[in-house]
Image (cartoon, rainbow, N blue to C red; front, side, top):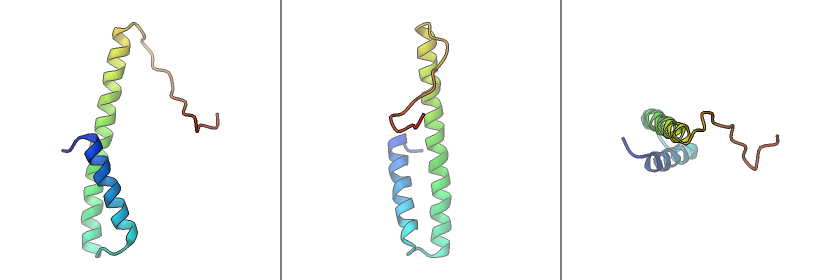
Length: 75
């Protein structure tokens, strides 16, 4: 399976191709199936990264993660 960045780039490309609507039904289904595989790979990579961060924080004596607040969050 490709690394996170490669999988994400391929997923974005698949979405663009499918949005154009030029693919046959069979090809669309194949692209969708590939997209599902890439999405799962990205989710797995993100989960592993989160676990590594958790381990690193616990080693530094910080047992809990704080919720992430982005600049675009309305809260």
